[in-house]
Length: 381
Picture: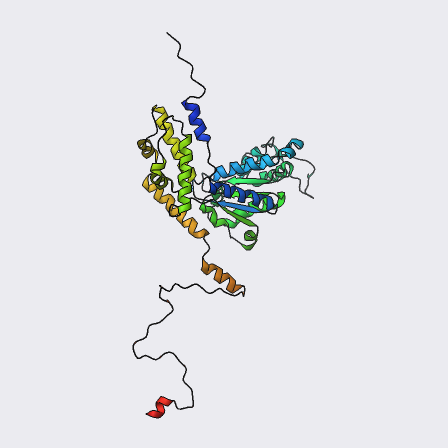
């Protein structure tokens, strides 16, 4: 029996893997990356940066690109100081019990900081306490998160990262009844204070609930919005088509389909989110490659999100976008409270004045009559 011919290095699997790792530097991503890097470099060391966006818009890609850029900028410094880590990234894992697990979060942070002996930390000695000079090993198996917090602070001080990035940060809002949302964010803010390290919280629009919990948090917070593309905007529409064309050129097939021709269908099931589009194309390309054919419309339709899924995603996205848009009424209200002049609102001549009241024929205008004098009309009677 003859041996099967060896597979070429550039076979379908390798081409598919290249497509899986391919990313498009589209304008929304580039702008958000520049805004995030500038915020990290220019903010106070204990600041919080919120990165919002709809699900599947590319927030994880934004985080990875930002990490690569900061690491490249620090290469010479990292060569001289091998103990330093440029950026620490961790995902806020959704809790199983309905309450965010800080103990698990701290342990994940310590792992990312390359901290040794995570389960064998020493208690911080309490000044004036009996036996303070005798260290004991901790934490026990049922310890809560506070036992790990000091270890995290010490490790961050030693590693000196430029920023700590928390992906899927909306999971911090998973709190038990009776606990305030502000308490959750106070923990992050306190660690940022103690370590003098910028914290970047990346998440969906659910993270908007954290933004303005109090004045101190608002003062120390910076917003970065990674938005989707809107089909009603001509520039956004053309950019989305260009992104589709870029993905089309990278498909792992010799006979590539004309994806631009179906851009409306691609937009419909991705809602203008490049991350959703990319994951969809990877699924469809995988199915087509396993069948040994080319990517067809049937492959795309079979791997597309359902209408119900898209409607739910659009409802959440539209609600988040509405919360982010500052209305003109809010600006007028703020300027009025500060004692500043309020710009006159531009009226549309085609629209009737809502403050105007209609009067019946013959009804007088609301004028003030002169008291103590006889009017001309009355004298003539």
